[in-house]
Length: 401
Image (cartoon, rainbow, N blue to C red; front, top):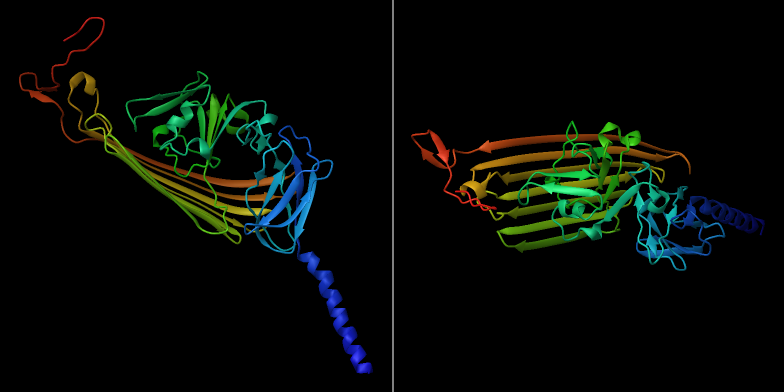
């Protein structure tokens, strides 16, 4: 009888120990739900989603704070909504055993569309809290665009100048500033040439999740290169718990066609994204063919809920014809310009506390540009020893032959 009681006590003791230890393995997600001006939203609905399912839900306190916990570990995201506010899902994040994750959520009013911007302060802030002129462009605003040139034309205060047809040299002028006075960033690393020059015609929309245009000088954060403004582009990240594959293709006149394929997802602490696109067109002028092949990748690994290691890569092979002044000579120049642009970044991001955040980033930009003239172009004039174009009438106030 005593032996039986001893065994029961032993089993009961182990059950108590297991019950006491199991909550310690919980992942705790906490933060505040605020409006774009930073005021807390009381009684807002918050839910923790894991593998596409809501595993725990709750409501915010009077100051907008919330706390959600679960014994599961893996990749989560928080779903939040409030009265007269649009529902929002945070970016996915990894939470392991014993992790405490801070997720600050900013809800947008149903009738106003605002975004979180980075270029003005260097840290994410709602656009309403930034006094500078910043325009945020999300992926939905350039889904049907092959490059970023047409997208930037829609931004107030930016004048886009392109030489010729698709693939021609393209520069932007922000509020009257010089075209070489702009800081151009990809995932926080500079893209422009030394001296500030950057050809926007080489930048395909493939592998771009969002873009920001900061109109105004910001040399405090970005140095003297940002004398007129800052244009920043961000590579997508995988977010789904399974591999997501997307294919997009289209075709048009002048022998134009485009194929694009993208793959992304998450696996435990790893998130991954890869994209490839091929754009080909003959344009409307002879010897003005253009193609743009892009490969891009983004890999991130969560060392813990506070530390993330990330690497991005982008390679673009571009070639465009150089027909010259075809309207004046009616004979296209037999030339080509080739570009190979490689951009890469590596970063370590660590959150020390709610108010202290550290980031170490390394950026690489390698550009190769080559102009080729295959042969003399035109009709050879032996008496003059030059190549001439066809007789052309230049139309104007008075015709010139």
